[in-house]
Image (cartoon, rainbow, N blue to C red; front, side, top):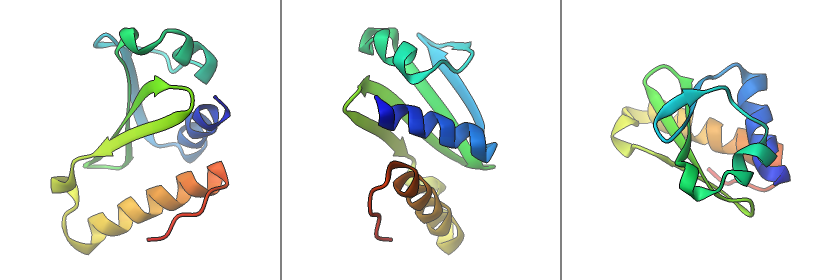
Length: 101
């Protein structure tokens, strides 16, 4: 659960645009404990735009794994790859885990 809270804190601290929803309804971004307590059935999604036009979708399936995906079609050239690498490094640093890009 600490990893999820670290990711939520990262999103807030970076000022990235985001939208959190449960069952398709946008609601205020909760603390990780509350988000995970609702379980997978809540359909919790955190959409994050670290830069305009680049969407990352975090899915709260379980406390032990921070899952997210990106649409690789949004990686327009080297700039898109650089954005993805910066995102992965930021998450890795926040979680204290190595990331090689």
